[in-house]
Image 1 (cartoon, rainbow, N blue to C red):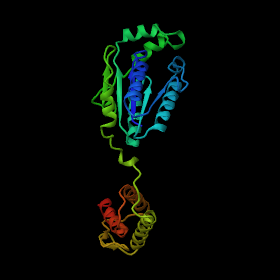
Image 2 (cartoon, helix red, strand yellow; image 1 turned 30 degrees about the vertical axis):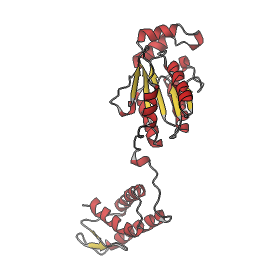
Image 3 (cartoon, one colour; image 1 turned 90 degrees about the horizontal axis):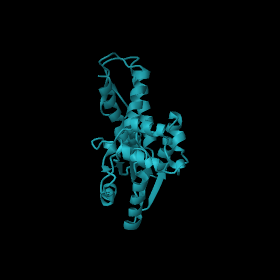
Image 4 (cartoon, one colour; image 1 turned 180 degrees about the horizontal axis):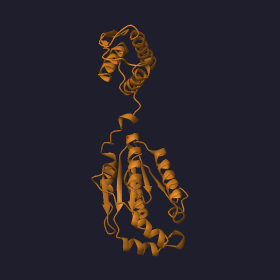
Length: 275
């Protein structure tokens, strides 16, 4: 589900905007909308925000709850302060990994107005003065030039929520490309991993044995490879195994159809690594 990250000072109107957006999706689109917030996660805000360890655990709960629901359909709204840019970056990485879009809605309410709204709440739902001031002091406002805060919708207290624009940002925009290291690439053949492991180990064994009778400058033939390893210097087993692990990691992310090329590719990789 695409992720909407609410952001703002305490009592800045985030939950009201969440209700507005949820109502729009339910009445004007065919998308489902799920809201994850502090109350649904069983978080007592005055207790949590008074203790850094509890606050970190609470953020972990919210993040985990959102991650479990991330997909390419429907909408998740994370209704919380989300006031730390590092946490918003973690959420951005999560949506990248899930290959689903996101956006940030910043309730840009002046501090004095947010404080007035907070004072008007029921006592059980009100931030204490100490907690309110501390959160305002630590607040890190979203910036549109940061990729994890973009697209960013800043909404003042008298502004209409741009629901259609938010919908377009979530469903008519491409998701951020995932980091290559987080993508599970399909293997090109059922025995690909077996052959990758077998042929690279065979090459390492051949090189270790060949060095017993060769000298630096010799070219070593490797079974299954057209190219030869140019032994510019001696290579011990530990270094060869390290090069082998690097090659295996890279090749898993870039599988090939013709596994007969693996040995030659590994030879080329070794030559480049020991230059």
